[in-house]
Image (cartoon, rainbow, N blue to C red; front, side, top):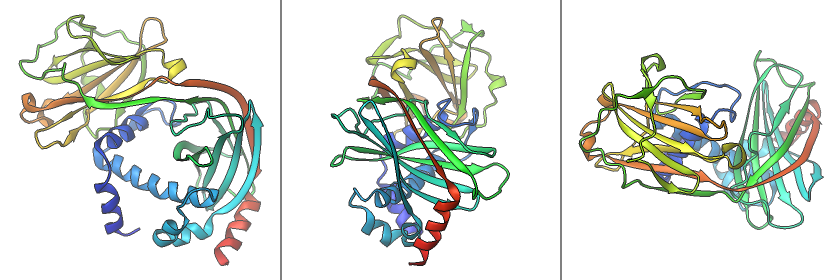
Length: 357
């Protein structure tokens, strides 16, 4: 993919997708690595989106159900040749999970999975595997699974699984097992300015909480702020609290040790996977992600607080910035037992044959 193509893709990305990419990467459980750092602020998020755009096209071509093959051949012709159709599937609770195609490149496997409701319309473009998936291989590896595309005509939601061998060895000779036990659909998404949060005459917060049940830490915004420098976290402020959407409450904001803290509470995350991202926009409309965010359980261990921390030196003319929120909430949970097992060595032979045709 040349830089003109990449530039055209990046210029068409809305700000909310940049925020979603950063927030998604930071959610504990989505990746097998618990602590995630980024050195390039939004640039790293954009790079991930560009990679996902190419992967989505590849998956669409493999599935044969999206009008993307001609586009893929024009942009990444070699990728289109290397995809090997698989079509191994299993069914449970009226939903089919199918391995559509696989591409093996030395120590890395790209596996394309689809989910389709055979009885109704329970699968949609918001389908989430709800951290219930499992990828098993015979060697040590780093694995990720991300939603790539949705085809309204067939009702298929498409996922890209990437497995990279930790020792750099080739994947040939292995058998891979992919399983899922829960799905979440029908989620609502909102991206809007939070007018209730004013950055003028910010209050210095002195009463902080220090004992928390930490869930995760993220530097997805590209900051270098060590978590050890954080003296404490905000307590809920009834005078500031408001709910921008059902399931989410902005609970407090203010200055702590020269840094801007904004805190939100996401309800019932175990059942609904409520999550989001708070960010700023400057006068020119440029998004500013938090340098550091820390998530921790509430007292009931059912909901999660997320504290977004912005370093003052990164925020010029703070009072002229606006606060925005991107939220993903609600959804219907579906349980089942979906599992497919397939060998790698046979697939790689097919890939080589496909590439030679």
